[in-house]
Image (cartoon, rainbow, N blue to C red; front, side, top):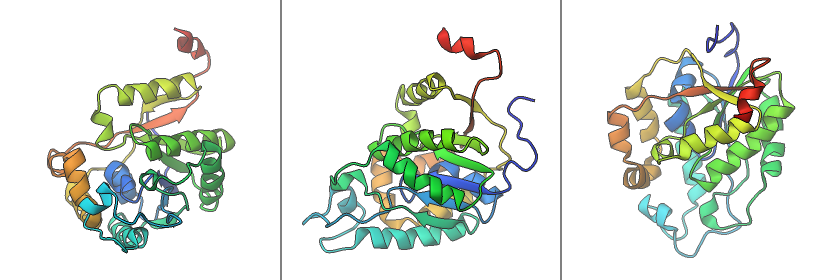
Length: 246
């Protein structure tokens, strides 16, 4: 039956997150439904040195010159993981694009995601659509390479909260994945919404509430509430490939 998951698909779940808060924003419900999952955060590394003055985003989050921003954000992430079903955080060493360090390639990101995921032995991995933000795009492009390396795993993508509402962005990524040989299809993922619990998880990211409120209307989205949607990433059914040519 199309869209319905086979038994055992969600036995061991991994969620790949571009930044510390993205798993909570876009995939909290699947984490609530599967306690003890693993969250791999890609851009969790410290820059060689912080700017003399905080970036606009960091300043809006309350950081001052001399603060170890990433270490403080890791502490926030630890607290949020407890709210997210006691998820296990795994932090990769790539640096947030706002610090203007040399950018990693999708191949480098893939080479870091793959062993971190394999260490868990996942049955399902959820990755972001990867839209509108350079780190989100890099995470998706790296994950796309890993999908081909780990075909035994069920792969899903979740919609990037906030960014998915920018006109055309979600459609662009779906089209790009479609023509890469994976057909994104909405999946029936047993993950009942718990919006109050999601709000509590997000409140753990104290330094991000101000920037997210300004740029993404966080309180409006949490209050709406905007549902999470998960898409299965898999090759087309046999014989349907020619639809890609249309």
